Image (cartoon, rainbow, N blue to C red; front, side, top):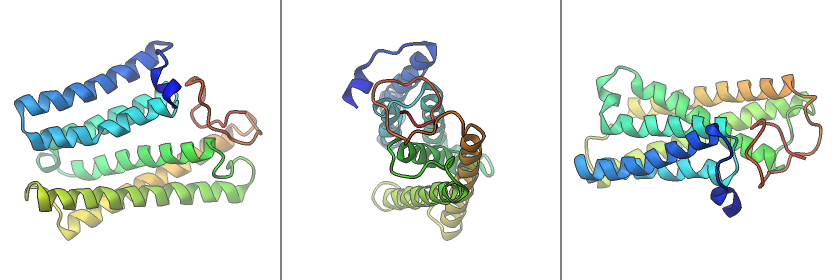
Length: 213
């Protein structure tokens, strides 16, 4: 994985993905200088998610999608968009959780931890259920982090019962949709590869959902 992270970008798409990582790091510095430490901390919390696709050799398209989604979610806190724009909170939870859950499922698939949904219908159903479950777990962790922020950092963070359940429901639905989309995509391309999935550590090119052989 270290080799993946240190490998120079090979094309414009990979350069763009690395630029987004740089923007994420610069965002933390910018928030610390011109906003406050709480905002800087929120942006810093997104950094592991920004660098993880590089370590895991995600293709540039998937890498960029994850980075853009996380940056939008983080900066929405800084600019208080969650309270200024109706239902913005639910939209971010829907898309952000969907992207992260799909990424985790792709990682499990490519590492051979789960059965390729192209092999049989039961495996496809498991893929949808697993992606949804991963999304619900991420939603629960997200809400726990918000609760910790409310207790130890600032009481301005919304942790009401309705807000918490609504956010988790949006994340769960987003993950369900992501699971269906990913499985349908894979089954539509079932002829691409019938080999057992294995996580690649040498290339970021190609289909992010196709197991490497």
